[in-house]
Image 1 (tube, rainbow, N blue to C red):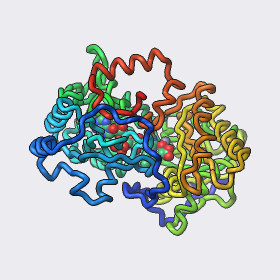
Image 2 (cartoon, protein in one colour; image 1 turned 180 degrees about the vertical axis):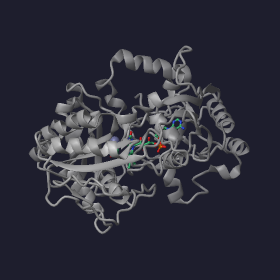
Image 3 (cartoon, rainbow, N blue to C red; image 1 turned 90 degrees about the horizontal axis):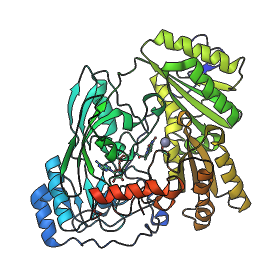
Image 4 (cartoon, helix red, strand yellow; image 1 turned 60 degrees about the vertical axis):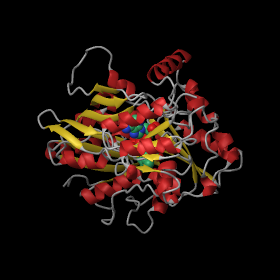
Length: 519
Ligand code: FAD
Ligand code: MLT
Ligand code: ZN
């Protein structure tokens, strides 16, 4: 108990909060919202024939090949539509392999017969990368979900790609380890999908990128060749770093079937605090102070503006989640500490709070979670933004990194732009994200559904703004089918050319996730 936190209230949250559940069956899927697919014309791929189906059924077993003719519409939509309900393909068949060997046989067959394939994990990606654009075969990794090995001394886990992130984390928890990645979609996304998107998430600040934590990858190339780069060594400089090729490649260079991951020990003491700030300058100063005062125990620094919190509170009305602070404020900062010694961490938090509320005056009010239920409720205020804004209408979603001092300028200028065009009452902008990584999520929800006028106001303007500010047009979600046309704004032509060279070397026929990443 942090008894010395007198200026802050503890335990002001409802005890009824429940963990965020990300549904793969969102009620927001309406025809009104669906995007008129990608503008990419269908490639010269073959169409699936009966004899192809027969062969695929021989490889996978009849019940592991689903065709539109045999499956309920909603079941089919689960593989064809993305989580936001923005993109929908018409896959000729959903394939569900159970082993690396089956993935290899399927891809060899597809490559030999010029059939295009979309690898898919939990289908929670936010850039339309996981669903077909036309009639590509969906290769779902969900049956390949076993944890194969855990070295209890080093914390190196070997896991199949289709293992759901939360399940992997729960397995590791039994052995006092954790996955060095956490995100709002944890109950649905897979570790293979996380690696394929190089997902960032909520504790990147502490544990860094999957590019650093994934030690090895087993992947199947487009022609069915299995590449074993499944090293379980922290140090291994034997030539090119092949696992890196597949991490963040969004299923365009190979299908990840297995991974080795270096997992940190699970922290024994965790504190969550939620603060209000008067302006974004104070948000930044709170972050800087947290780094100074909390040092090695700091594990997350997230932020939301009031607009984002309003969406969550509306969405969560009646669930027990409520504003933990008495008054409304323009900005909120969530800070988490994780360590191995509760007393030590609390002392550090105390020092931080004294400075933040005292001589530095960076925060106006705040609350520290008194127990796990309250901690979850605070996290929900932040993790729930995506779902709340997507449910409220049609969401235009931007995931960018920027120099920290300019991070919120983009939200302000977006609002001004929407206002000038007279759409500010129906197109609501909010800013939130991973402050510790200078990763801004700018969402604009059009309350009346998809709106081409709003879209025209936002694109390419947002991407160009970010490029001119020397930021990245994709901090963590990837490129998918959403942003290939803007890739040049964050990557030099020479770099894009090398990406093309790699793509054609590994997948000469271009059957793996076509129309994605590279236009
Ligand atoms: P999918 O959506 O199925 O696929 C994503 C991409 O990876 C596709 O291009 C697909 O072809 C490819 N792919 C999938 N599996 C494989 C495989 N085995 N081999 C090769 N390619 C494969 N992202 C973040 O970075 N940070 C966040 O904080 C974050 N929070 C989120 C919160 C919510 C509520 C939601 C819905 C999404 C969030 N995301 C976040 C987006 C997202 O990228 C992740 O959810 C996740 O990494 C995708 O995993 P998945 O298994 O669902 O992959
Ligand atoms: C998040 O940080 O909440 C996720 O990346 C999802 C989103 O951007 O909406
Ligand atoms: Zn994010």
